[in-house]
Amino acid sequence: MSRAAAATIHLAALAANLARVRALAPRAKVMAVVKADGYGHGLERVARALGDADAFGVASLQDGQRLRAAGFRQRIVVLSGYDEPGDLPELRRLALEPVIHHVSQLDLLEAERVASGHPLRCWVEIDTGMHRLGFDPEALPGVMARLAALPQVERAPVLMSHFANSDVADDPISAEQMRRFDAACAAHDTERSLANSAGLLHFPGHAAEWIRVGGLLYGISVIEGRTGADLGFHPAMTLSTRLIAINRVRAGESVGYAGTYICPEDMPVGVAAIGYGDGYPRHVPVDTPVRVGGREVPLIGRVSMDLVTLDLRGHPEARVGDPVVLWGRGLPVERIAAAAETIGYELTCGMTRRVAFVEDVSPPGGAGIT
Ligand SMILES: Cc1ncc(COP(=O)(O)O)c(C=O)c1O
Image (cartoon, rainbow, N blue to C red):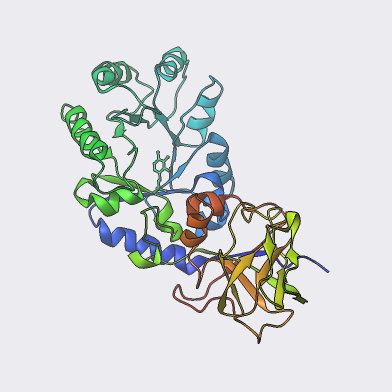
């Protein structure tokens, strides 16, 4: 028997989420961030569903190569830029747009011998306070002057920066980042890009010419206490499997590895075919919600590699073969992420190769897997 674990990708939800993002920032161009294999949903499939985006944002040259090989002609921004001389001809050949965030990249660009062809379109990242990638604002005029002196680089690169904590509405770091960004950009007549998903929600006035949105397109919120659904977005992935056993376990007996759960009474224990070998987080605690045949039940015992165990006392009609939803439609991934002390992004990115991916074209608000 093949394993039932499946990630159903709701293509219409992706498209509807993009439309909602556009409605929130009607004047901004949208870079759909599809790095990490489209946040685990599948790069090419996500790009197809989000074909209306003004650009795609990927982490690496390899992702750009994949998108071009699949025939995508949209603008593609490589968010980590490049780090080897050999990357530059490939970026040019494929018309990919690297983010330049470090002086070593300027050195590579200046050392490049370019015979002919279109100038390279670049983005320049300013470090406004996250201290991950980007130039210090004070270095920006020098960086722009070096780029302007290169005929093989297109004029007026887009200036961008990244929020460190936009998930939290009132963290003063965001206000300071916006102030530094505006100040750094003031002297340059270029397009700008600052907001990610949470930035768009919390600071719509700072959408600038480009927003770079990932999470919301997948229907995932990183704002504490709010799910994507609360914000009008639709989950793009439903992770599901089936119930493969129901056992009656006596009061006082333990369930699963290390016997961490002791049955308080004689009770039905369901077993579903999914585990950390599929990407379901091993460390979720007892009472993490799972949906069986459309009804929520608590997880009990330890998550093992292939299986989870469920308390079915509240669901006496459950039968072997019933569909089980781990997250997605009807069960927001943010709830599981909270139980696992992470964010929804990490969960959707974590699907392993044995999970079957299924494409679904039903309307975005459609029924869950029941
Ligand atoms: C540089 C950059 N811009 C935009 C995004 C999109 O962020 P989000 O998925 O929260 O919208 C990311 C993702 O981490 C990023 O690294």
